[in-house]
Amino acid sequence: MDSFYDMKAWELLGLIAGGEVKAAEVLDSVLDRMERVEERVHSYITPTPEEARAAADAADRAAAGGGAGKAAGIPMAVKDVLCTRGVRTTCGSRMLEGYVPVYDATVVERLRGEGLVMVGKANMDEFAMGSSTENSAFGPTRNPWDLERVPGGSSGGSAAAVAAGEAIWALGSDTGGSIRQPASFCGLVGMKPTYGLVSRYGLVAFASSLDQVGPITRDVKDCALLLSLLAGHDPMDSTSLDAAVPDYLAAMEGDIRGIRVGVPRELMQEGLTDGVRKAVEGCLDLFARLGAEVEEATLPNLDYALSAYYIIAPAEASSNLARFDGVRYGLRVKGADDMIEMYGRTRAAGFGPEVKRRIMLGTYALSAGYYEAYYGQAQKVRTLIVRDFQDAFERFDILVSPTSPTPAFGLGERTEDLLAMYLSDVCTIPVNLAGIPAISIPCGLEDGLPLGLQIMGKVLGEATVLRAARAMEEALSFKARPGAEKGVGA
Ligand code: GLN
Image (cartoon, rainbow, N blue to C red; front, side, top):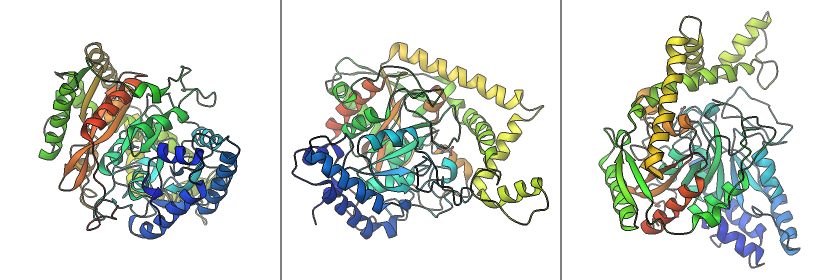
């Protein structure tokens, strides 16, 4: 069997368009790989091989006529937080039992227009709350590099699928790091776009002022390509930006001489492993060698980002998740005497412990008497963080940091220690609070596990972020693949 499953989308698109390879053959390769590894990795909640087969055949017919779309024939994993018409959407929760959307999320619909081949709905932390994919009601996903470790989260299924060769690329969502951290743990590229660049219509809401959909890919070029298919105004999302979308593929090329790189001191403090620190410092040297000007930056309010996030995100979640009441969607527990009891029993049975914790935290922070002290205060801190970034981007074109303070941790290692779990996202959360774009690219290994470099840009600065990421990717030339001893093998 060939190894199409191990290739990049842009490589395969060229081969399919040139008639050298059929989309059906690429799909065979990925489905065959799924058969060999899925049992161990568990990337998917709902595999969709029949739908994928029909889409691949359609892509081949379109290619024969010279009119294949820009995603045609590329097997993709879609995080199960995005609505897919006719395919159950669970959000990793029991709460949505039996829910089959009657519409596609805008991002899915756009990709369908470009020949999407969806191979499955990917596993995730319940309602995207978590950093390890251990909070899924469907059981955890394992890291393809080391099956005893987590793939990160909440888009852990999406990242694991791409890293294990069970998809060529994937869609994730990122509220506090859920695309970038799993990409970092799985040796992949992951990007959270500027808030409003990509439509949230049909993305089941966690924290609406923070959520964004974005790509998880094998290199920066695929990331630029996929982002260009996702970005753009959507009248169905009132927070969608009506801005021109640049040609990210073209913008990604070119050198980075003279680019000003800031390194926020607050993101290089305690808690980093030696490997992470060394890998990021190595990248800073490389940036300097590529002609960039590298300097320390100070964004003092980042020290409060995690605290502010764990008020704002749960507050928004407690409001968003109120709709899951046993009436309109999914699960309804029978045998209650009245409506209030039915609500209570359904929510008690349907939500897992982390989701309940967030709903309680959020409800408390929003309740009369506490609103100003918690929610109001967190919003003020958020404003200060936004200003810190604005000030920093007066002096710098990009900011860089580790994506995560550590490589992938062991399954079960942080489930009892919530602070340790929450700290996984200490470097990624400020980006969501500020609404700016950031990418994670693989930048080294520690004990055989991949590490990520985070590159942040100003609002709508995706082109610059991608160009810096591309230059760094070339300079680093990270080629490691999951080993066969602890992981799934290449
Ligand atoms: N890990 C963070 C949380 O649990 C971020 C999750 C996300 O980005 N969806 O809230």
